[in-house]
Length: 309
Image (cartoon, rainbow, N blue to C red; front, top):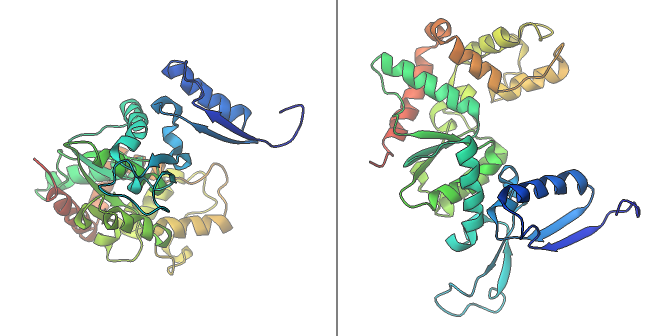
């Protein structure tokens, strides 16, 4: 392929079948490193030949007629390629479950009650705020919830489908929401994967159409976190007056301002303000407004009501 200097389409049937699990993972890395300029399609039943960081690449091949209680129409019968995990049977999901299980064992935690959030920043804020509210005699998030960050909204359906199919696992979500995510989030209950009350977004508690976890805080307070964490890297301090108040989400408003006022070094991310919040909790907590506490407490009460004992 290198000699020909042209893009090719590679079709492989069960590559790495004779390799052990770790060698199959090495093969995946080889594919990414050496074949990135080509289109590669391969079949597999091995969970080690599925990259859990890139579930969006996976397509499930399933014979829809096998499990149908009666004969299907001709156009629906036979082997089909499914892009949507909601349409797959548990047996067809098994390799994905294996890949997910291995990834969770390495990086995440699950439990009988798993709360799916998008990122590590969500987990830091939720645990820190819950602990402080409990100290004040208010409702915090029950420790029976195991918070599982999945690494972005695009991965939520796959994780929900795979965790929810495990016997004895109760799943709920607390997610960021913007217009582009609305259909994805609604499908979680419209496809009967979860009940509607199990699917929560931060907007349910901020009273806005769009919201991230950062919008649970007053915008002025969150800007204090950002300025404290990124002070030496910012061209100038970010203030409320500098942000476009017509942008509904705080993160988006900050990113829009930074696009026109680049940082002197580095780049802005969601994790560092969350880490600063947890590390400086004793100092910053007195500045958290009662309205912020009310929003988080309402979310925690709702989620605690979904626990399965």
